Image (cartoon, rainbow, N blue to C red):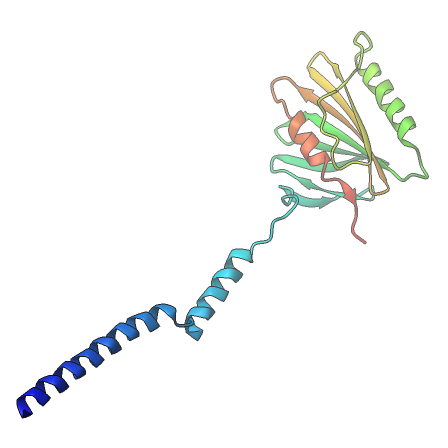
Length: 199
């Protein structure tokens, strides 16, 4: 009899142990995350969102202020900005000073867009009297209130004129490029960074 009771109690004890083991496994799978686990998830979420998307990348080059006009711009390495004459600056290629971009800026009170465009086209025609200035149709005018670009071939390469209005600043650019240098695209990229000096 005692032997039967011992066997019965052994079976019950084993059954309870097995049930307890089974419930422990189930409980482990269904338990709430520990505070440490929750902290890891929060840190992971913050890390994923910590780099906000930007609309535009910071322009390349060194931020440089004009000595004679009320503008600043980013100047790429290998170029230099200097005052050419009153109300005109020159941004030129250091190794090829004949390759340069003339920069003129105006307030809305000084001139309007149509007048600036007309003057720019006349300048291009004066550079190459035998050639007809043509409008650059693939020019990217995004970011400007209004803009126009014209081009004329020259004996050395090309002359490109650009007029744009942005943030109450009217800008007229004239690019004198050489076919051996081909700096027009970089000039245009730097020209896009022109803005009124920070007050």
